[in-house]
Image 1: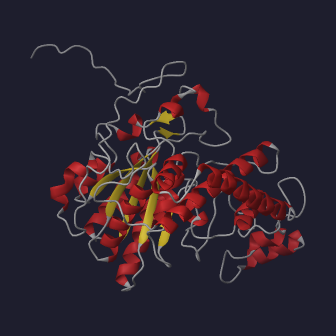
Image 2 (image 1 turned 180 degrees about the vertical axis):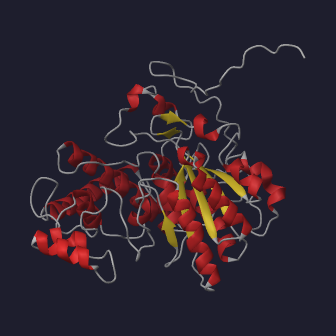
Image 3 (image 1 turned 90 degrees about the vertical axis):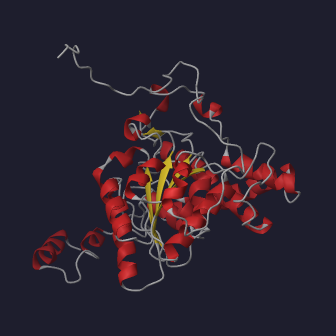
Length: 410
């Protein structure tokens, strides 16, 4: 046998490093409206190519075109725009609050608002999301009080979670928002298990699992796909591909699969990719996947192609690992601007009304912030009671915890 030489270890490298020119030439973007919309009972083997394309509705002129268009009324689109604008304004105020020392930590959604805001409108009351820390739009779009969200961020006396969760890790059963776990991928298997339980009990509620591109490399992701495909769990398996897993570019987790949606093909799961910065496309694909789940047709894997404009968190400095102008070069644009332009093109919105809405939303968010800060912030005002750490853990408190509570004087 001929000597093949020394083996070489391969480590994927991003296209550009800090100081370089941003390059997204490797992102193939199909023409808006060019990807067909199959029936929900389609044989997954016949739509394998959809795991490598990108479903788009809004074209460069702001028009809604193609078979995935026409599912939302003008009023629903205007509401969706306000939801995204509210989330963006909420983010900006809470980011500022963290810099002022009012909370220890915060994570923005900048550039990704369409994913969670549009998806929520495809669900029904009682369906359950198992989110990551970047899907607060699920709450905003469902009318969850911003004051309660801020109270949780501040860990104050009115925090609905009594200071037990890291800031931005919300929980609301009423709004179908399962408690966030900071250890991503765990919620994927939880979502599939919840969906299987719903089917076993002959319920009508479905689950939605959420994960980032980086965490798809974890074993929980693959275990979830095994159970979802085997038992046809009524679940939508969402992968938010925002190009960066903290400071690691997506190629590390993606490996040789080409796309994250392609991961579902090996499990026989219908797998689609969608323009995550197109509110109409996100909603249309979410509705398609939700209808499949509710019709007992099993899981769907959806990859949202988007871009994380801001830092991973307030603990991160993205200038250390990517060019500062990279977000400006992202070819799929800004989700808020794109929906705004579409509504202007339709004649139901204008630049003046948009400016007015921005001012109204800012006023609403500031009012909520003042109310929340009246209950306390990280270093000032009311705090959850020490007694709270002993409550809500066991149905019947064991003797050793009763003793500890007594020793604490609470």
